[in-house]
Image 1 (cartoon, each protein chain N blue to C red):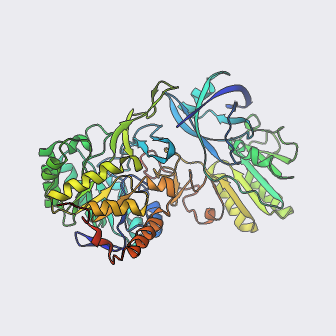
Image 2: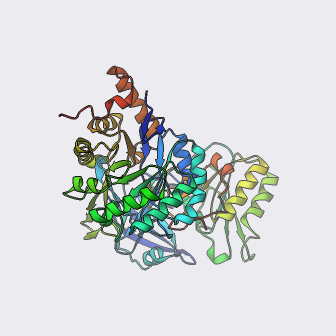
Image 3: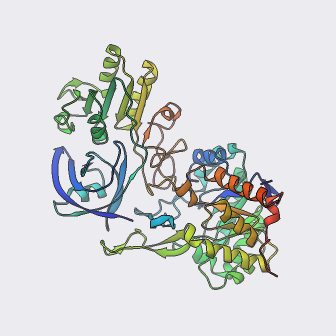
Amino acid sequence: MYRVVKIEEIIDEAKDIKTFKFRDSSSPLPGQFYMVWLPGIDEFPMSISHIGVMKGFTVKKIGAGTSAMHALNPGDKLWIRGPYGRGFEIVDGTALVVGGGSGMATLAPLIESLPEPDVIIAARTADELLFTNRFKNANVHLATDDGSAGFKGFATQLAAKMLDEKKYEMIYTCGPEPMLLGMVELARRYDVKIQASLERLMKCGIGICDSCSINGYRVCVDGPVFSEELFSMDELGRVRRGPSGKKM
Amino acid sequence: MLSVSVNGIQFRNPLILASGILDESGATMLRIARAGAGGIVTKSVGAKERAGYGNPVVYELPHERGIINAIGLANPGIDAYGEELRIALQGGVPIIGSVFGSTAEEFAALAKKMEEYGVHAVELNLSCPHASGYGMEVGVDKKLVREIVSAVKSEVQVPVWAKLTPNTHDLRGIAAAAEDADAFVLINTVRGMAIDINARRPVLSNAYGGLSGPCIKPVGVRAVYEIAREFDTPIIGVGGITTGEDAIEYMMAGASAVQIGTAILYRGINAFREIAGEIESWLIENGIEKVSELVGMAQVR
């Protein structure tokens, strides 16, 4: 069963990234996601970027479905089901939050729920950085691959420097899988706990079709946020599956 | 107490993972085996890689009545599936390789491949209700069903299970056409659909799908009861089994074992262990020593 929600506001956030604000009475946790259906076009998973009564999806244009969503206007409707999946578990203590690209959309409501986290907002280049001015409660560090803003280099390189300087209780991260794999390796090396939100090709969203599974874990139900399991996931950042289930 | 034997294959309990649910990747099947399943049927695999339908592929009925799905026989193709089976077989429970095709030759070749990969039996998908040219469309053609079962039987040594469709007025006729099979699997999903009235269009991208879950249990129990009266062939019951009582009902109708699918949506992967516990409790309360004593117990002759 879908709920129909009306888009009340659309905000240009960064290159090819827009936020769609809507009212919905569900109560998601940071890290949870919804399935968004555009009738006649596509249905895809979307993590929640703004929680509360006025909610938001922050969407990067990547395929047919998200491109169609970018063409919508305020007043248009979205069909949604959810929230689904396991969100972030907020633990006491110092937190390092590392978001790559549109992965920041997933992390944003988490950051706002943490007392005073250190945050790395990373992207390939400056105009892809997301939510650089959103957080009042966080120590924000920027990183770009090309050095056009903040630290020049990968998020993992900046994270390693910060881990050298300070003892963290928990790393929270979301972004491209190679970056997540790098963060898991850092968590192991620095002996810090980690939670990472994964994204995989998803069909049913409710834990029965096996499309999004990684090492036997269903991203849609067992995740999308994983913690201890990450250390044994040898498919992370290495093996993906296409719509047929074939390894790529 | 819970172990059963079907075609000489020993299952530690009668609860087998149904085809199409959490059985695309080897690692997931291994996890299901470790979570207490008595056996596992693989995703239906064809000769070639197939992406299946676009989203939405599933529609969830309110109040846990069931789901309608049209995944569209997505599968990596038989050549790529050996690697998944190699992992799944480490679980130590019997694995039944499900195959689909459109001709007897295709079924036979796929079954042979499955046998080479080490499966304990093969299941012929003669019943998927939402794929053009496959499944149910093949499975209601009695002449073709006879040819397929016969061709597969002469190609492989392992037992051959025929999964039949409930979407017919002539289930007995189809079962008769499949009588060379070593077991019947009853039932596949019931062809159905859902329309979103706000979108004013079908929900599933394929429009039509297969209905599963608690709402189809009476159809499945009826099919098992009806076929068990007329055939000596062992029956695997499937369709809406969510609790131990549901499984017992199917076995009393005549099923030697059962398959579980949609229940995982409602009870998680622990469904197997929980349902097994529920069966065991019922057997103890009712003074029955072995679950196999239930088979056909409710048949009124």
